[in-house]
Amino acid sequence: MKQTLIFLTVMLFMLPLTAQDFFFHGEKSYPCTEVFGLQSNSGDSEGLQILFAKDGSKALIIVRKESLFELTISGKLIIYLEDGTVISCIDRGLNDYVDNIASSVYYLTDEELTKMANSNINAIRYKLEGDIVITKNLVYDAGGDYTASNKGSYRTNYPAVITSFFIESTYKKPGEPAIPFMKTTKPVEETAKPTISEEALFGGSAEGPNYQGQSSGSGNAGIGFSLSGRDMVGIPSIKDDSQKEGKVTLKIKVDRNGKVINAEYTIAGSTTSDPYLKELSVDAALNAKFNPDENAPEVQQGTMTFVFKMK
Image (cartoon, rainbow, N blue to C red; front, side):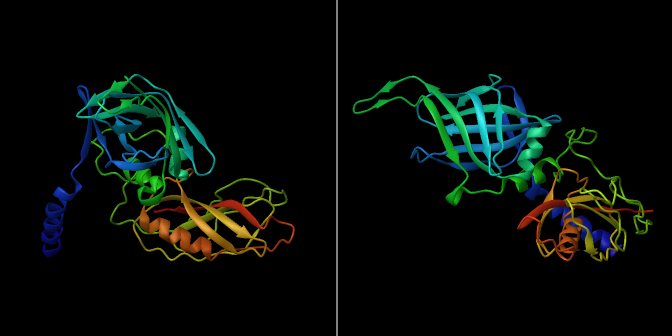
């Protein structure tokens, strides 16, 4: 009974801190993130504001620009990611200018959102349209193409923002469908006990150049990997007594000596973003060992997948 009382007290205290933000456009409102900034590359001190929102099961990116003169953000919105990916969003005419703020709503496909969850925003290119304004000492024409960058004091980890809002968000209404690219894990019974996942996670021949490994591990986790031409010779041990399940996929980098020098969570292939399972997986991956290969790239990239199962 004491534990229940403590839990209720904490929940009641935390509710005001997790109030949902909304973005209003015309007669519609969208659940959204906080507003973030990008640094203008044209010397404009105002820069560009962006936020992410949901329209039912669809993902949105909203761009805003403060201006004393009426402006319209129009045309394609081009998003440049740090891995070289370029995303082009179509203008659907959802433009507005209210309270000295021009805004435009763009839809993101599931594929585009997945790419943005795996690579940070480098810069965004946008187009402004507005009338030429003549004041006493100034002729002002804001029309044209502009870029704003994710740098300096504005720099933000947008993959973390996207993962938190679209996957880990607690704001989804009961019964509302998840975004199609997301997969949710089923609830865990309190009486469930962790077991070892015995089946192989991937297919493929052990003799081929793209042999992907078989499940292994301890506790309730199975492990699989994909690293062209390499075998895992040091299998990490995972000690997990949690009542959680799901699949965690990591991008890994391996040197010629077979040492895993970097491991990062990727939403692609994962069915859970639980922080505890992600931490277990990253720690295990960094302790894995592959066979040395002096002919391999100096840094070879691949994936490791950890499946946590319950019975």
